[in-house]
Length: 90
Image (cartoon, rainbow, N blue to C red; front, top):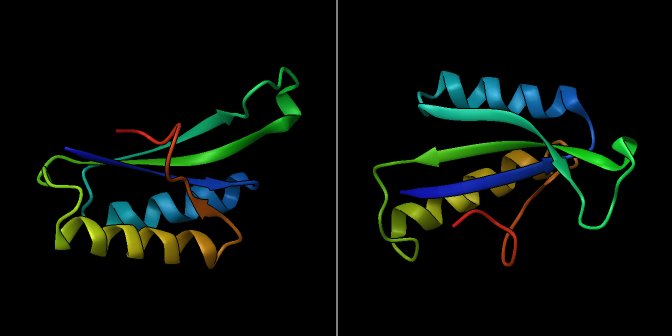
């Protein structure tokens, strides 16, 4: 199982990406509100699209790398980013 998290400042952008991925038949796609580390104010929260892909076990494999590139592109086209590194889903 591999998880990806795309971060957006605008809810509409997150929902658009989630809809697009759902139409591409990704089975687990969720829009969630992401709390920034150390922030209590709800206005400092971003919107996130959380994608779980059960068919990928090797995060260093070609398929996982292709999905990472696909999600990076989808996020960047809408002013977002793919969360990577510490804090990203494992």
